[in-house]
Length: 154
Image (cartoon, rainbow, N blue to C red; front, side):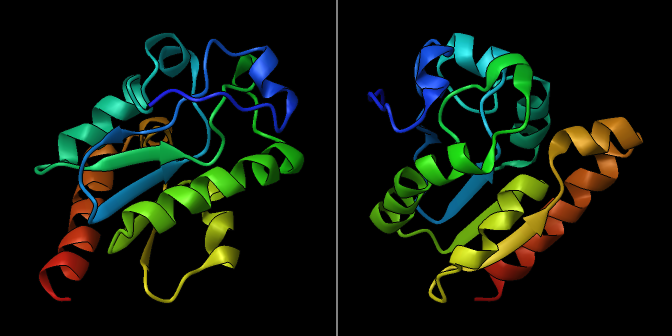
């Protein structure tokens, strides 16, 4: 889905805001912000970290980011940029009503302050953290265990 947003200045430096990818309304993955590959392809998590994440997913999924526009040079979004995009993310959560929200990385995990008790939250490191630490397989196994624990034991 494409949309126009001018809540912060990131729209000036990205090709297009990136809404989401996927069609599973049970599990939502939330990352930090689109990167270069995402900005070019118009979908979240399509670069190397997306390849790692998608390799774990055996069924349909819904992926989005806190911030919908790529920050210049892949920098961390500012608090003002995150706050400007939060209404979009809250709308996504309210609209699709996932059973589980997986917060990928430290920036996404800051969203716990907006915890909705009807939604189960899983905190997990970002896929690139696994790449940097050399533990991609362990990262995949731990994520799958967390998902199975919640989805198979509601």
